[in-house]
Amino acid sequence: MADSKGLVLVVEDERAIADLVRLYLAREGFGVHVESDGLAGLAAARRLHPVAIVLDVGLPSLDGTELCRRLRADDDWTPVLFVTARDDEIDRVLGLELGADDYVTKPFSPRELVARVKTVLRRTRPAERGGPPLVLGAVSLDPDRRRAWVEGAEVDLTTTEFDLLAFLLRRPGRVYPREHLLSEVWGYAAAAGTRTVDVHVAQLRAKLGPASPIRTVRGVGYSADSR
Ligand code: CA
Image (cartoon, rainbow, N blue to C red; front, side, top):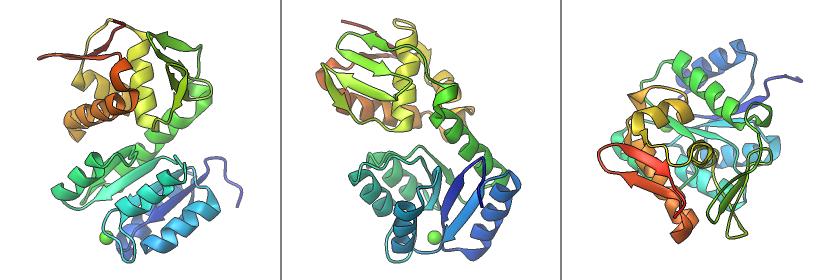
């Protein structure tokens, strides 16, 4: 059972999709546990401590967004890759500050889903990310421990929020187009849509409050500046 790449929890009620995802993840060396309804998925997440969760939004007994909300309420920040079936589900996933790390839309290629899972994990693997503390104005980050503070008070950031902020703080003053951020921070080109970047910036600003160093450069993108 021991698996160097770790266990991925797949919560998906469409059997054919779940089987396909299981097959592709297993082929890449992941352990895979599948649940087909929301409450069982939540229990499995708490019991198994997976390295990542592939989470369908439309599920019996407990919807995927609610499952994620309950995990986050427990301070569980396991990376979540949402599987959405419709545009309105994407809006719900992105709009609710659930700490979604990424999403794919049905129908998706299992190969692409596996690539996304690996990207999320690469970003959450400390050895490949760490580095010295980053400080700008009132905001400080510890990349090794993946912790963030504003004016000395710790702030909970999702994996993606942390990576985005760390990326901007590493090169203060430099302005990055959204497409560039999408490729650097999310690890793939603009296919997911640049509004993903805007949504995560908005969430970061909400968490950092007035001390947020993120500046919008109209018509270009974002930068981090001390003020
Ligand atoms: Ca479903």
